[in-house]
Image 1 (cartoon, rainbow, N blue to C red):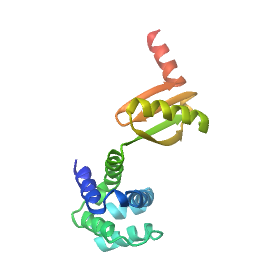
Image 2: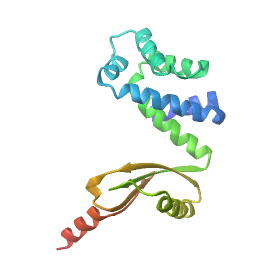
Image 3: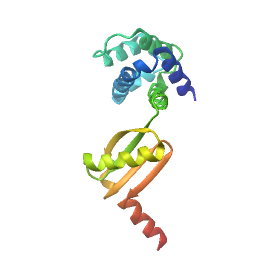
Length: 171
């Protein structure tokens, strides 16, 4: 809930026109937080915000300075909300997708799915949801075959692993 409030504020501040850039900035921050030590520094209640901000600026060094985004990050640090930056980024992405009438579909397959198959899948999902679809492809060898699709709260599991589990449960 708190993360979505921050995300709404940033969307109001930067507008949809800056959303692609802001999403890339959040991805850079998420990448920074994936390093254990950097995550500890950012989430620390003891270390000064100036150090945390310097670390975030370093993660964003490839981007031009955006005063709105930087002020937003400073505010989060001042309010002691550094621990929810990832969640804010996720909420922001969801809000932007809603504004653009787009839906994110995570597609999991045992091996990389070809573009042709992905195109067929895209048409089916777009017709089901009546929205444009953006895919995030992931491979998971544990699926054995087939596909697992996550769209928002919905989960469509057509994997071989799930079929075997259902068969085993029915026996």
